[in-house]
Image (cartoon, rainbow, N blue to C red):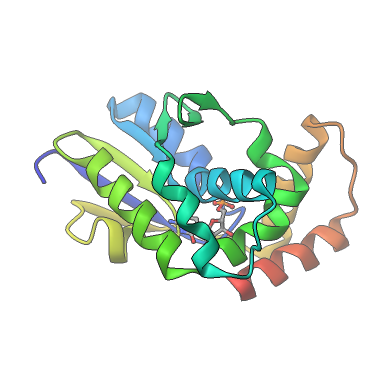
Length: 178
Ligand code: DC
């Protein structure tokens, strides 16, 4: 897999995507946010009203082309960048990403996307599974309060106000599920 590879792993809200975007701009690397891919599958699964608890119902993915390009996420050329940040997606994405079938499918797409290019990829399993031979591996984390504050700011931009305590609990719950 030629090309310079940077892997950024770490928990929700630690700033992986923000940092990756900045590094990508400065070092002229392609950035791929793999969490956006898991979110995109979750969004489509919700749209299709499949049984989210049944791994075999995710075969619909076989007809999907998932692509992350220039900070946007596409499913079969449909831009779903805004839709994947909904609360419904955030609530269900840990479950969807727990299925080996879903992971195998997306890991393959991620490895193919990283082939032959200089890339910075962020997600939970990038240094361990997706790019085990990455030139640089970073595990980025932050305390729960900071992560909750980041999430609060993101939500404010979307016009949603939420208490810090509630967000901290949400983050702890998602850490546990992830
Ligand atoms: O980084 P994020 O919050 O957008 O990620 C959404 C979810 O996707 C997160 O709950 C865990 C999952 N995920 C994963 O299992 N593996 C990855 N490489 C990236 C994300």
